[in-house]
Length: 245
Ligand code: IPE
Ligand code: IPE
Ligand code: MG
Image (cartoon, rainbow, N blue to C red; front, side, top):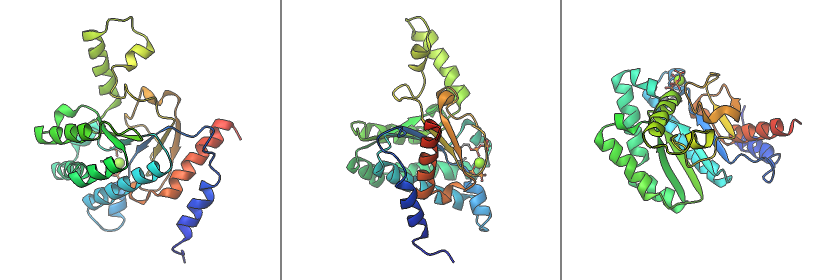
């Protein structure tokens, strides 16, 4: 039998081992994978997994804020994900709408969290693009934490559009620093830690340039089952790797 306090006890035990002063990850990026499998294992439609995944995502933002993670980048929809059945794609876009609805934005403002979108937004409908721009504009001055949502994001697409941007406007000789100014993440340092749920161990196009020196952490848990304990576990292992202890 699993006692109800089992998870929170496990979480507080591992949290106590985390050093907040040294090698604390400033930027965590998460590949929120496994919604479909989570649902199918429960005899539910894949969409139920996406809904549960959104609730987990909202909770993860709260946990990260509480734990002083300054930048959180979430892979929500890839350039490849358009190949899924139309109904599933529409459901996911509907969830994005729900996420950036007014009450969430109020919560973000109360918690001084800035929302940003990275990816090629031009593929979305005008309505969706406007909602995304509105969410970014309304939270723009919040400076405690940044949440980047990667939507219609693909690392290769990002690099190609950066090259195009540089060719069009670049005036300074090309260097790594100059190139980074044209990436979607130009305002952020690269991620320190990249987490992928669901047991898959690949990047699926996520932050191809920015992941060069990141630590990668994998868990076989499906995204809707991600929790505080797993986040602390990832941070703790990240710190152990950094210090080679
Ligand atoms: C991740 O879960 C969410 C998105 C890609 C939008 P999946 O939908 O990929 O779930 P699995 O990997 O099929 O279980
Ligand atoms: C990666 O997951 C994209 C997101 C988490 C949004 P996928 O499920 O789309 O990736 P593959 O197909 O397993 O590589
Ligand atoms: Mg998947």
